[in-house]
Length: 84
Image (cartoon, rainbow, N blue to C red):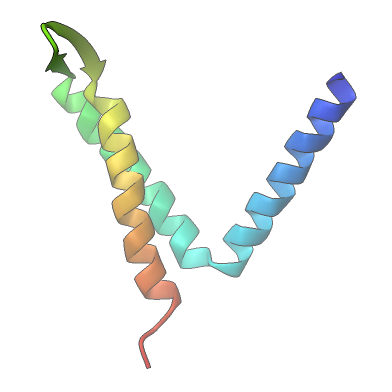
């Protein structure tokens, strides 16, 4: 079972490397956005999410990392595929 997991991980890594090589700006800006979001999130601290009578704390770094990666990805796509 361990070998099968290693093969799946290696296959996924190859696919990710091929995608990054095919679209370099998209990959680069996705990482830049994620890092920038994480840094801002660590500076902010945490946020509370309240719903249905309960509340829980969520690190802002997690939320802003995802948002930053999404925004960076969209910007990178615009750089990789120029409009004719």
